[in-house]
Amino acid sequence: MMTPESALDIEPQPISVEDDPPGNVDDSITSFTSENAHPPQRVSQHRIPVVVIGVCMALSGVWFGWQAWSATAAATALLNPVAATGTAVFTSVPDGASITIDGTTRGVTPLRVQLPAGTHSVQITSGPMLRTLPITVESGGVVSQYVELAASQAATGGRLEIGSEPPGALVALDGISKGMTPLVIADAAAGQHRVTVSAGGNSVNRTVNVTRGATSTLVVSIAPVPAAADSSGGWLTVQAPMDMDIMEDGRILGSTRMERVMLPVGSHRIELANPALEFTIVRTVQIAAGRTANVEVARPSGRLSVNAVPWADVSLDGVSLGTTPLGEVAVPIGPHELVFRHPQLGERRQTVTVKAQTPARIGIDLRK
Image (cartoon, rainbow, N blue to C red; front, side, top):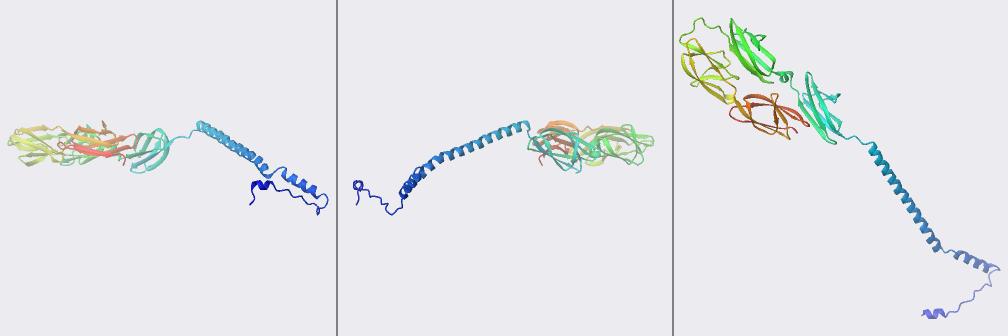
């Protein structure tokens, strides 16, 4: 086995050039020298740094270009901001109501429209009905408006029906002649009115309450007064703001729709009742021969609690009650109209009947 020391003792062998033609030795030496003057390894080592530098310069150019583009885009965004918008949805009962927003007509209900963020004034029109509502649109949000547009009767008042026994009597409403019984006034203003029914020189005055969107009925007896009054009896008239039964000892004598009820002379314990409204009142009256005793009944109050989700401003028959929740509000008994208003969720109407004994409670979800 050859050791490193023995390898150093090997004598170099002479190179034979006898078979080579003249000049080949020099050519071989020249060729060797030319090939080994720049070894491949050294050439590769010199080229690698150049490639790396080129790549770094290219990446630097890309980075500086991206920075310049980002700065330009940011400046453009500042100079040309995108307007923030939201969505407004309008529905109504009935459909087909015209929607005008900030003075521009946008279509009819049901309607979905994109609006710039901010506060807008909306007009909803259906025939003679016109509602103006403010809405607030948030960027990327949705605002829903639901409006019930009732017939013109419900908007201005209620229906009043007046009859008489016998028919054909003249009718005046608040001193203004309206016609003859049976009479229907389709658009009587909401509130109390004085009704005068006249026939044969005899006139009857009654007070009637008209509720918005409801029908009030008044029937009076207008028969002429007998020339000679019955000495054994007299008359009872009752003025009440609602229909009530007139009873004595559990027996129904008549109702407040009648002009008068005849009773024997003497003292009577009269019970006046409206079972539907849970209201009963007792009066003691003295009946004189040929005379008329009069009893007046005031409308009592019941209790009303109102709530809304998420919340609402509430009005009762056009009078503001405040913001929900509202508890144990004193309200005259009978039917009433509640209006719920929310700046984003619109307006909703609800009818409620308040009773004398049982508290009325009403709640509504404006999100539905």
